[in-house]
Length: 326
Image 1 (cartoon, rainbow, N blue to C red):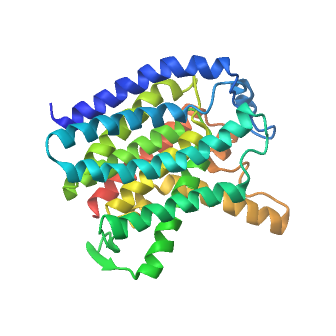
Image 2 (cartoon, rainbow, N blue to C red):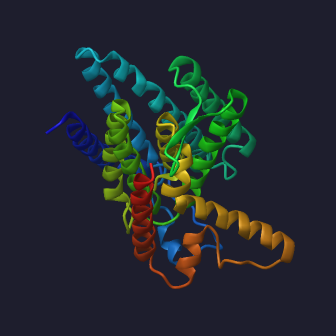
Image 3 (tube, rainbow, N blue to C red):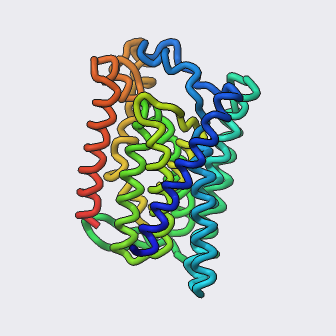
């Protein structure tokens, strides 16, 4: 059994153990889900289910990366050990922004949570720090891979920096919008992260393979408690954290454009919200029964499990396509 497989299994076990410990604590703190009054009626029974569970994945990933860092350092692979840190920092950084938002809403009972401007500022600062590290610290340059054409292009720094920042902000918010049904976001993100890990294997980027293995173990472990009927929800803590992982890996691999394909479901979820809002403001009518799109299918009669299965299978197919065009 190779190191990456052991890493994945270890991460999975750690996540399950943490979930067993942390979920009762969240229940005791009464950190419960708040459902939208205009949402699907079937969701009202979810009211009070522990949320902010993304902290489980965050802690598990920190432990996993720490163990991997020690392993590679002891074995003399200092470069791999050091390159794990920025991937972790971006993921944890955006996750902490989500945690602060959840904490204010659910623990401090401030229904507005973190001000949108502060939330965006926090994500912006972390994104800028990550892209500057990749360019200056890791010397990865501004090369970006163009799928299908199978070639790299050098983007001018003054365009590359805002481009990467946009990718991080767009990905984190897209995953956040996809989180709304038991197991939906965690299932889709697990598939996308697995795809990026496979590409890391193809490209021979060891740190991505190790980091991806840790993340896969963490998301699978969390999924054990997040599938319908969910015992815990991830909250903004988890959705921003997972969006951070996906964007960090894609940018590090220099394939952010591939997210348009492999993360098409979160992209469509985001577009459904934008279209719904724009159309309603212009006409006073709605195109979808409810946005994001997964709620439209729910209100059209689909069960939650069917939405998760269909969206996950679509993501799996898109990931296969993504791998085929790199």
